[in-house]
Length: 157
Image 1 (cartoon, rainbow, N blue to C red):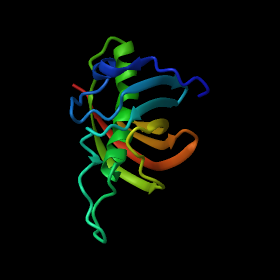
Image 2: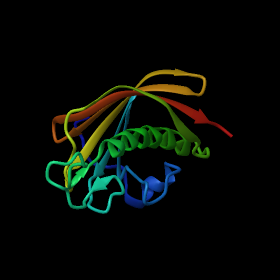
Image 3: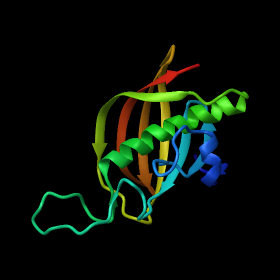
């Protein structure tokens, strides 16, 4: 996607996903092109998945001032949820709940620092009944920082 101008952002994202603060991990939606959707997140110090405490030298604690692995995984899941929410609201339907069934081939190349903007591409690999297999790439500017495949179950009412 060449155009990185958000079509939905801020509070508008809450119409597309079931999550609510402080667990909201998407703040921008850039749209859908065929089987690809695009979303974003600016990493902030108050993010529940950001490590901002003091780090003890020589310890195995999380890296300070960075979004942790769990936050990246949740961002990917919510990016997929934003795609579904966008499609459902566009059809006038209620946004369904989704659940992560599995995460495969997860590679985290770097943890983004506070202030960085994530740009995530979700590609639908396969949809069978209420199960969607997606592939995700998370970038900061043009640098790939994380990628995975995720199986998501949609609970329709």
